Amino acid sequence: MPVLTDQQRKFYETTLEVTRQEINDLKDQIDQELAKVKDRIADLQNAINASKQMYEAACTRLGVPNDLDDEGEGQD
Image (cartoon, rainbow, N blue to C red):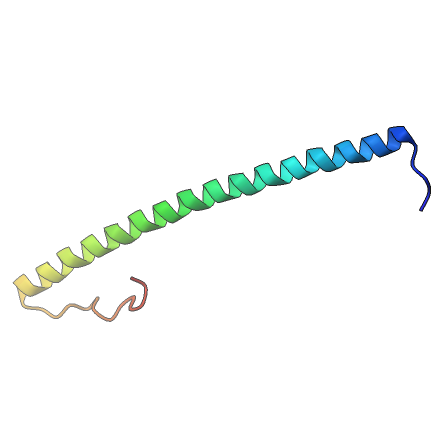
């Protein structure tokens, strides 16, 4: 491996520092976006559960079987 000049060494050291920080910043952004997505999924799941309860109540009042009982099992 060729010997680096002081200027080249400084350049590569600076590059390491800058890119390491960029990578850490990007990881932080990914974590933030992932948290938002998880929150949104939880909200949607809660909405599904509320709608299923209303659907079940309507089926009961009408005296008809709940055709959604078997749908989506294991997704709650």
